[in-house]
Length: 234
Image 1 (cartoon, one colour):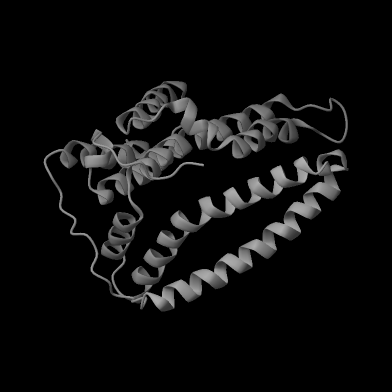
Image 2 (image 1 turned 90 degrees about the vertical axis):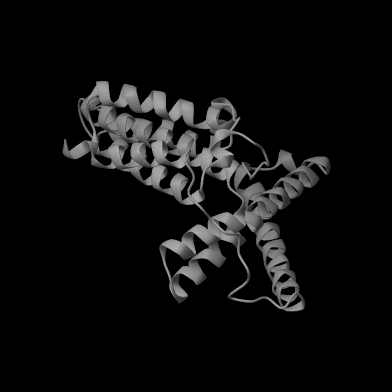
């Protein structure tokens, strides 16, 4: 599971609003272009993005291994037909191309997660969406960044505990049911404790957030973001 890692890389020093704009522009370019030349250029950009945060592309993709498994399986499902010829390669190729675009977007998203603290993400969102909507969304994003890795760790500990007691010998459905029931129970318990902790710490909707400021290093990245967003129109 990817999480923020302190560092001094180029991506760490960028303003979070710049990184959000880069993600937005890259996603538009990835799904707006269909030619192999454009996808080749976007592939280079997507591979360079994790490196700018000191993150290996292989490690970034490994964090999305379950999503990648679905993306790899999707072209087979899309190509299958109910009658002869049983496989439609054109549908499979279109699905594979769409899956590849998603992989590129995931690489860029992994760069943002690894290089941006949750508080900076909340500040950027509240700057982009002023008012109660931005505050609510910012709080939600901050809680997800902090809470989701804990829930995944809980599921792994439940799975390991079951394996230690021989529970991994049962059917897949039975194992999934046990992990799901225990995982939901632990999730609700953690949510209750989180609510109590927020009240104990006098949770406020308007805390003092970090001050964001654009620097000279943000200018070329913002220009790249705008260029990527407009590239499908050119």
